[in-house]
Image (cartoon, rainbow over all chains, first blue to last red; front, side):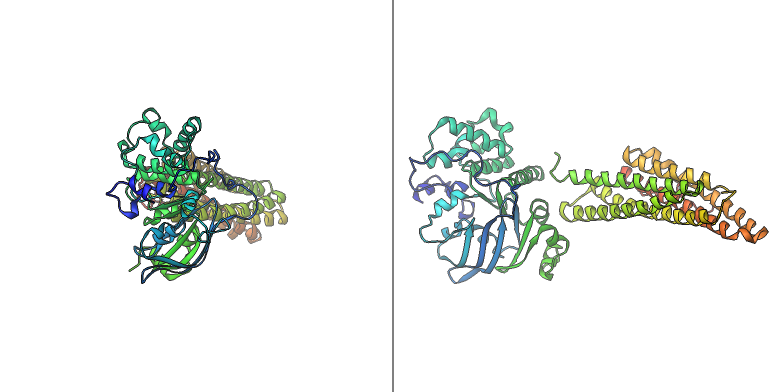
Length: 301
Length: 224
C-alpha cells in the first residue's frame, strides 16, 4: 500500500483516508480491460427473490484485546439502502469497514466468523483485499478529494491507477460518473480546476463520483453528510436514493432522520452487538426491542 | 429542491380528494334513495361506505409513515394532520350517509312519504357545504373555506324546525310516528354531515393559513 499512502494527504487520519485507497492496486494492471460502462450487477427490478449482497455470520472483530463486534449475523439485501445506527463506539463503523476489509488497516485487527459478498467468501484464502475494495467502494465522513488533482483527475484516479489509458473511455466514464453523482452540470465547464475548489457538498459528491467511476458493486458510506449543510445533505440523500437503483448501499449515520429517510432496512447496534435489524419503517415505527425504542425515540442513556 | 419522497404527499392529497368525492357521492345517493324511495340506490350507498372506510385506513397509514420516516415540518406537517382529521370527518359523514340510506330503505318498504319537511333543502345544503369544503382544499381557497361554517347555521336551523314540525305531527297523529321518527333521525344525520363539512373547512383554514379557527366566534354554532 506504499504507493497509495504517497498520494494521501498527510494530514488525514486513517478514518478519512480517500475512497480511492479502496481501489488502488499496488502495481498498475496494464492488461486490464476497461470495466463495463453499466454497473455490473443487475438492476433492482429483476424478478425473483432479492439477492443477498453480504451474508454476515457470527462475526466478531477484535482490535487487540478489545472486542468491537460481538457475534453479529445479518444479511444485507442487494440494490437497496441499509442503514447502520447506534451510539458512538457501538461498532457500526467497524462493521461497515469489515465489509471491504478496511478495518484490517488498523494494527492488531482480527476477526472470527464469516462474511460472504455476493456468494464469495470475503476473507477466503487467496482473496486480495485490494480487489475486494474495487468491488466495494467507500465514501467517508469528510470529503477528501486529492488536493493536488483536478476535478477530472480525482474522478479518474482509480481507473488510471488500475492502468486504464483509453482516453475516449476515460472521458465517457468521467461524464457518466459525474452525472450519476449529480455534479456534472455544476462542474462540466471547469473540470480542470482543483477538486478542492468545490464547496463541501460538491466535494462529497465528487468523492461519490470517484467511487462510482470504478463501478463497484457496493458502496459503503460512513456518515457521508455529517459535515454538510441541510441543502448539500439533501442533494447527497437524493443521490443515495438514485444510486440505490443500481448499487447496494450500506450507510452508517448518526442522523436518525437520515436513516429513516434514505434506507430500506435499518440495523441498530449497541456495544458491539446487533440489537435489532429490520425494515426501516418497522424499526422507526414499531421497534421490537426496548433498547431500539429508547434509541430511536431519543430516550437513550 | 423537490425530494424523492415529496410525491408521497401528492399521493396523500389525491387519496383525500378521492375520499371526499366518494363521500359526496355517498351523501348524494343517500338523499336520492330517500327522496325517490329507491331501494337499489340505498344499497349502493352501503357498498360505497366500505370504500370510504378503506380510504380512511390508507390515509392514516400514509400519514403515520410520513411522520415516522420523513420528519415533516411547516405546511407538510399541517397537511399530514389535516389529512388525518379530514379523513376522519369524511368517514363519519359517510357513516351518516349509510344511516340515511338504511332508514330510506325502511321507509320505502313501509309506504309513501307525502312530506319530507325541510329534508330536501337540508340535503342540498349539506352536499353544497361538503363540496365547498373539499373544493377549498383542492383549490387552496381560504375564502371559500371561511364561507362553510357560516352557512352551516342554516342547516342547524332547518334541523331544529324539522324537529318541531315532526314532533307536532306525532302529537296530532300517532300513526305517523314511525315515519316521523325516521325523518327526525335523517334530519339529524344531514345536520351532522354539514357539521363534518364545517370541521373539514376549519382544517383547510389551518392548512392554508396556519390559523386555528375552531371554537372561535366566527365558527361558533351554538345559540344561533
